[in-house]
Image 1 (tube, rainbow, N blue to C red):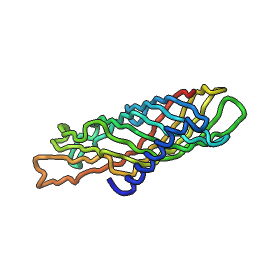
Image 2: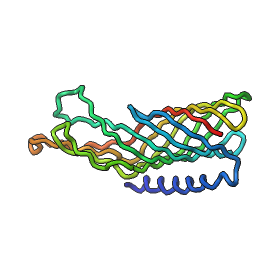
Image 3: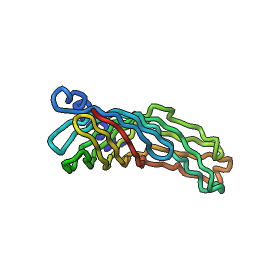
Image 4: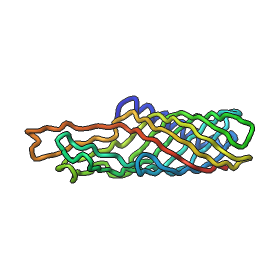
Length: 206
């Protein structure tokens, strides 16, 4: 894990802990979000929406995230339409600043940005039986940036939420090494990929 990701994770943990104690100090709402991330992935979690002013909120959360990573075939593999995916599970901690656009009605659009840290809780190393052997390996920790937009609807404390968000990872999460019987003749270098995903989430806060 590189230094940039390490610093991101430490900062997010500090902000996350401060968010956990903030409900005793600031006005806040507790919420539940659920939705889909990537191809056939899922995301479920809870968040705090902590008021920092009329339009600004600090929103840490914790999510169970299930992601399906596509396994890229080696260059010598000639069945282009065959698709292989690995299912990897993470605990994700996003820390966001959310700006609400006040339209003086129950419908309020918002924009948000922040960072996230994700900790893998599933198997790290998966042996490849699809492309003549080899293995896939997934990082213990991922970190990066979250950008998104959405809206909330409701009066009083109970509100319904819908948001679209993009996770932009900074570290190499997936490493694929293809094995083959003719590896000495046709070597295939490892393939590394970062976390790039889009999510749609719906939820409720109160």
